[in-house]
Length: 125
Image 1 (cartoon, one colour):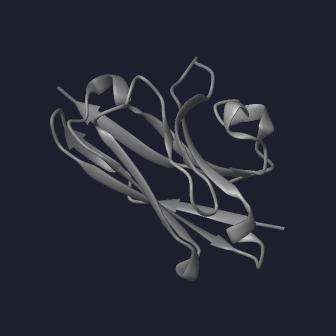
Image 2 (cartoon, helix red, strand yellow; image 1 turned 60 degrees about the vertical axis):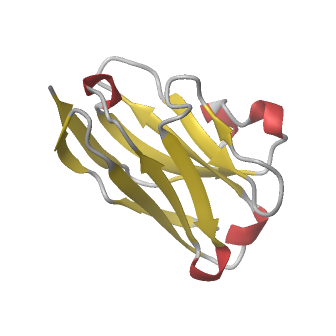
């Protein structure tokens, strides 16, 4: 069992930055890949970034590549995503989830076993 809580969202201006955090409870956090997704009203849940439990390289969606950096601290059961140069199109509820599938499946929301409740990001122009 993994319980996830997102934080760090808010209302910002275009061009600003936010650092989101996902804190997990449970003893198996370090065995999972953790991914960030976002969902805007009327749209499907969209992949943002993911980071495996140890080693390897993170994966970013094309929409945030160059503006996003994901990292994790397994000792604190926390993963962070730094988002820079935010745009109105980034407005969404941001969710973190965990999976143990291979890298090629990371962008698929249906592959994630647990989700947090989300944190709202609103970017105004």
